[in-house]
Amino acid sequence: MGTISVTQIDPRVASFIEKPRKMLINGNWVDAVSGKTFPSYDPSNGEVLATVAEGDRADIDLAVKAARKAFDSASPWRKMTASERGRLIWKLADLLEQHTEEFAYLESLDNGKPLTIARAADVPLAVDLFRYMAGWATKIEGNTIPLSVPYTPGARYLSYTLREPVGVVGQIIAWNFPLLMAAWKLGPALASGCTVVLKPAEQTPLSALRLGELIMEAGFPEGVVNIVPGYGETAGAALAAHNDVDKVAFTGSTEVGKLIVHAATGNLKRVSLELGGKSPNVVFKDADMKATIPGAASAIFFNHGQCCCAGSRLYVEKPVFNEVVDGIAERAKKIKVGRGLEPTTDMGPLVSSEQLNRVCGYLESGFSQGAKAIAGGHKTSDKGYFVEPTVLVNTSHDMKVVQEEIFGPVVVAMPFSDPEEIVPQANDNVYGLAAGVWTTDIGKAHRMAEHLQAGTVWINCYNIFDAALPFGGYKQSGWGREMGHEVLNNYTQTKAVCARIA
Ligand code: NAI
Ligand code: MG
Image 1 (cartoon, rainbow, N blue to C red):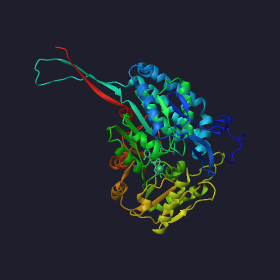
Image 2: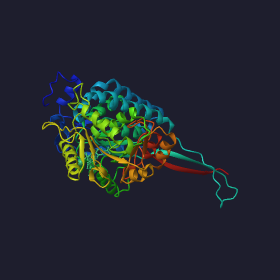
Image 3: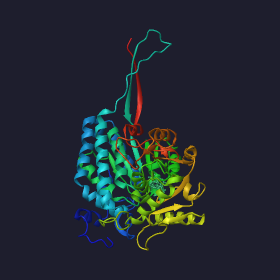
Image 4: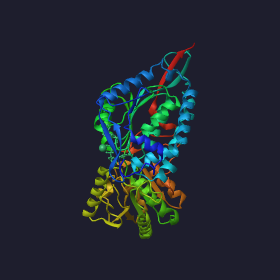
């Protein structure tokens, strides 16, 4: 348990992380078939926080079997009415809400994010997502369709569509919002009537495992949700390639997203992907600076820049470039970087030493290509995975730091003179997850929204999420959408029924 004294943290959390955590298969908490375990670390000091059962192919097999059995047409889950399914999801939301404090602590310890943020954002957003999806369970409807078949003159038909669950779903998620990503994935899968094998990220398995306990407490039948922690190359790859999995939903790097697509070819399982980004954030000279400067700072620094949609490429119209960039740098310098559990912390550590090395590698690459830091630029200590909030200037289009996803608190800022040229420049990137526009000109704002190639465009705001608002990527940022009613397309398939009635 490292340097955390158990009296400092919620006692329920202390007792949860004291014991080695098992995996959830067919309603039972079990060890890995191999007996192996792996450590989850506290990113604020690099010490082992908890020990977790290490799933691999054999465990994934058992979990998929359990999910398949739970999806059988005679199973309690499949016999449940839509209303009963919705009420179970709603109950899970209530339970999660009652344990907000406990989950906020777990999330802060395992991921490093400030407790205050986990409490105000991660947990309430997950609760709200489950409530929103609970409502959809009774509203997944097909259509009635008039037919005009030319080669059966005079015949009449009754035709309609059924929207049915796709079946057994494998869900592989990342570590930046461990609980919220689990909710984004589980909520719509359960509302649609699917069964699930969830593999949390190896860096942050704890909140998903605790959620598994609440799922059983809520009364979901055994096997409907199975949770198998483990590494990507083993448990993740086995799940992605499994021939009895009907669909895989993935959140993570674009690199692994491509591996998931390859792995799906065995049985042509459906795939949805929520991948990386390098999102442009465009500030025009007519923007309201009081909102824009804090907004553009938070667009990159929220969650330590570990957001797939982070506003990491900042384009500022020349006359206000210095004002905006200096304003963001000033805010960056005031951000208090520290341990997530400290109430005064604004920004915690990065999630892992691997992530720290990646971000520091990008900083070095930027400096070697001529970039200059007007705030930050370094890691802050030898203990824990802390990096200073960083603003890079003297950057240009072809630099690695401008083209590639850094996934840390590092923004690259570039001036522009011709508003006509900013759209092609903003769009000249392999990603297309999100974009920001700051202006008081309403027409310009919506013209920009039309032309930016991104799944989300925020105007005079950034990082605004809602369970009802679809989120996902254009180009190499992904396939399909999370949230909103659009996400139900990921978990349902359409059956056309055609009956001759005359
Ligand atoms: P990753 O893509 O390797 O990991 C994400 C998930 O995929 C984890 O659960 C992992 O265990 C699993 N995974 C890894 N390899 C797999 C495989 N071969 N088959 C099946 N599952 C596999 O991401 P990682 O290494 O944690 O971060 C690397 C970079 O990815 C970050 O620096 C960032 O740029 C990006 N990233 C993007 C995220 C997003 O929200 N879109 C989230 C996390 C990372
Ligand atoms: Mg990885």
